[in-house]
Amino acid sequence: MNMLPVEREAIMPRVDGMRRNIQKLEELAKLPFKEFSEGDAFDLAQHHLRLALEGIFHISSHILSRLPGARANEYKEVARKMGEQGIVPKAFCAKALVPMAGMRNILVHHYADIDAKRLHNIIKKHTKDIDTFLNAIKKFMKHPEKFGISLR
Figure 1 (cartoon, rainbow, N blue to C red):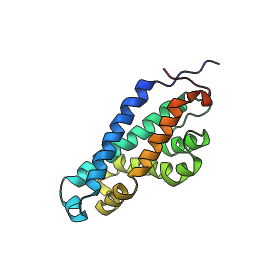
Figure 2: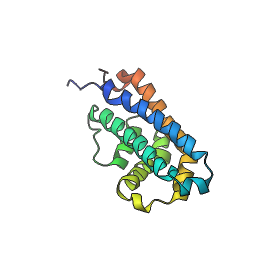
Figure 3: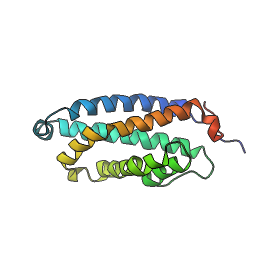
């Protein structure tokens, strides 16, 4: 069976964008909470976090669509399958990637309910999780043959 290759152009521009999102989030995380919650920083943090999380799940869905039996229909399932396929560590999936799927859904569907304190805490303590994901993707991109697929 000929499998479709992973498309660099479906992944690399998103990786670059996610790195910019992380940089913005790290800048916003340095703000004192009062300043963060009363100004535009809160809205900007939601925006950049949503974009970074959308990037994670777009990249993940693209990769999984190339692997037999790995397609997923919901974001938490995408997160779990990334661990099951060995693209990211399983422990990372449970600890970070599945909760990221939940946060992505909140940012997209329940944005009016987002608590400024929770968001400030997330960007202060969890942007490294996005880096962890990107490092796993970097490893995957160097050796996709380990998964029986190629790059184009």
